[in-house]
Length: 239
Image (cartoon, rainbow, N blue to C red):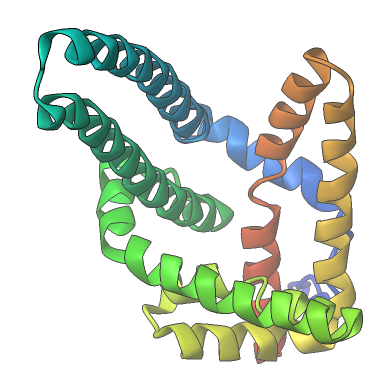
């Protein structure tokens, strides 16, 4: 009888450049979801900026009219208040969409094709915890950079995968940070590789107009790479 041959479990993570093809394939299989979630925040911010600009102009016009007609100050101030409310709603929506993107990346890295409705539920559940995680990680990284550059860079590597840990394992902020640091420590180069490739993909943005579009597309195609790396290091940690 012939023995079935099993492929050996890789002992080292794949190249960060190799992850580009894997990530791009995952994005293309879920292109509509990635396109919506990547373009929606930009569209909302643009709409908010245009609305705010028009409202400022209206407020200035009303202010001039108010000085002549005695229009109440609160009526003028209400325009500014409405603009602030819209701005805060846009920020909230952007935070939820960011959480949805993390969830989408995590699911497609597992080979799944999630529905936006399911991702929406995840975004609603985790956006506030992810915001807290982002603030805590930023404090650690920026604090490390202020003290010495090296500690800040170490913190960036340690907590790079923490959003995926938090969502997948439904952990606290501190536990997500601990697990991320634990699984990435033996393979720090694989984390820096992803960061380095991401920086390279952003370089076309220095070219006016077309460069920004190219960088946006490349970044979206590579956006699943961190989630793929998380899945990879999680498996390696168990071997």
